[in-house]
Amino acid sequence: MALMDFIKKQFIDIIQWTEDSDGLLSWRFPMEGMEIQNGGMLVVRESQMAVFVNEGQVADVFGPGTHKLTTQTLPVLTYLKNWDKLFQSPFKSDVYFFSTRQQIDQKWGTPQPITIRDKDFGAVRLRAFGNYAYRIADPKLFHTEISGTRDAYPVGDLEGQLRGMVLQNISNAIAGSGLPFLDLAANQVMFADALAKELAPVFAKIGLKLEAMTVQNVSLPEELQKILDQKIGMGMVGNDMGKFMQYQTAQAIPKFAESAGQGGGVAGDAMGLGAGVALGQVLAQNLQAGLQGGAAQAAQAAAAAPAAALGVKPEDVMATLEKLGDLKAKGILTQEEFDAKKAELLKKLV
Image 1 (cartoon, rainbow, N blue to C red):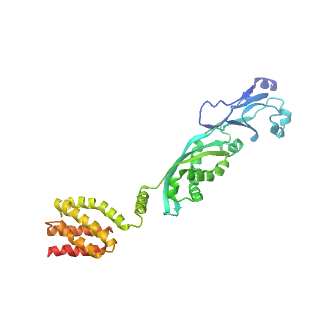
Image 2 (tube, rainbow, N blue to C red):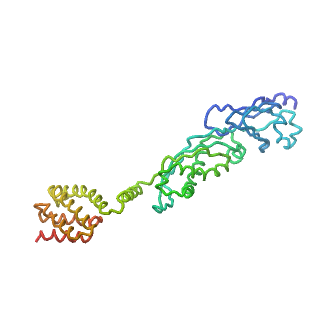
Image 3 (cartoon, rainbow, N blue to C red):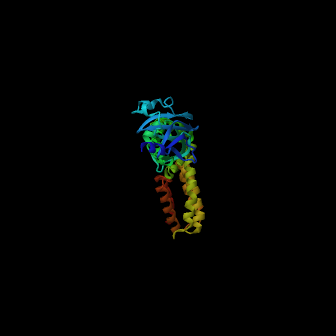
């Protein structure tokens, strides 16, 4: 009976993996009901490695090439239980193939803004995304730590874990680079290098080698981007606050004139398009004069406001005061400038 069972067994002469499709990191050669013929051939192609596992123990690792399976090519197996006695006959062992090709264009990104410390802005929340590439460098370690006894281990099953590793190390990479946010956004290659330095030992712990890391974009959330734009504008103006305030006033005048032109039940179109524009011009002159310390010039410009807006009615004067109050509340007018204009306009009501 034992002889018949032996005759019925199927023996494997060639063990190989042709990798018919992409997306697999490891694949187990189907051994069910079959045994490996003594002297059989193991074919490991370029970009592959093979691992022999016997009774749960990794026996040997083979690189690219054609290997004849004998005691000379599998010396590690001789110390296993009874292997020296059984090796002359066909034997059964699990064979796992591992793809060592680069797994390229693996995406990473911050689903939510992450908070970092920045020497220019203090605490900053930023977003970043890019891609990376890796390969299996230590198939034995990858087998014992990740893929195990599965028939196949696809790239997709590892994607979430690796992306989590990238995100977990972003803060450390930024801190290690020593770059402020503005330099970080402008020098993405340096950021990527710092991130790769943090990740390399983390990948190595599971048998992987990080081959490439890119950072394609670093940005701030919209509300912080607006603040950054203001800071950049301040930097362009430098210490000339007069010019900066003129610019801010010029930006505010069209909105003020548009609001006044709508009437709002108080001021008519003439007030909005005529007096509103004239008053805006005067306000710009007053701000410039105030910042330069010319109180007399500011008073003179304020007095010109009613003259510029000919035919202003009492209700229009009150509407103008309301608009001036809004400008003061927004910080465009100082309290002193508002009081001076208020006194001048109230004289028209007498």
